[in-house]
Image 1: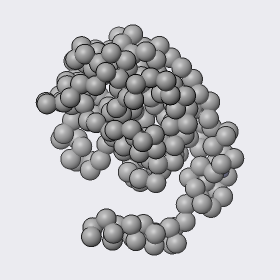
Image 2 (image 1 turned 30 degrees about the vertical axis):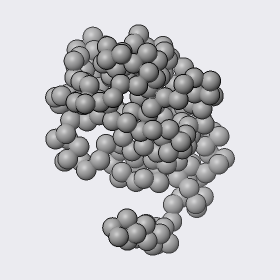
Image 3 (image 1 turned 90 degrees about the vertical axis):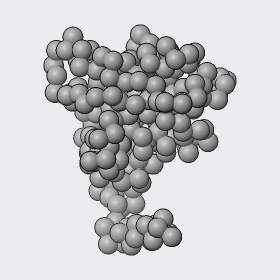
Length: 213
Ligand SMILES: [Zn+2]
């Protein structure tokens, strides 16, 4: 019942506050097909503990920046869906021949998740899994609060800040292949730390994926 009402409220909201493109203000989507083509610039990096990290766009692009802020502060599942679709398209070729991976996300501390009401990385991960018809499986927990990585300039301090901050979720079934999802990839310290926990737990193949870098 709840989701039924929610769905209809969303439909009403669309009538009164129609979505407009962050790039060109066209109605319909947050990133229209044409602006999406402009923001997509896939890139691959190689963190130590993962096979590679794929990012789809640059955070510097104004439309992408607005989309990611919307995701972070509004928890809108439709923006999560649009961004996950972008990531899914870039990621799909890498998943084709391998054993099916599970999708997981960079966690928040339980306390922070409760205060905020959602975790945008988790929203993205769930939408990505839906889009690729794969299983979404929470694998990691964040054990204590950290300073936002973006507020730390020194690379060494960034590494220190996230060191030992993740642990394997209690009773998590360990898959052979996992994709770790986050919204933004900065220096890679967070992804690398999360990947190291999965690697130590026995995950053989790890891909990291973030919407923007
Ligand atoms: Zn547009």
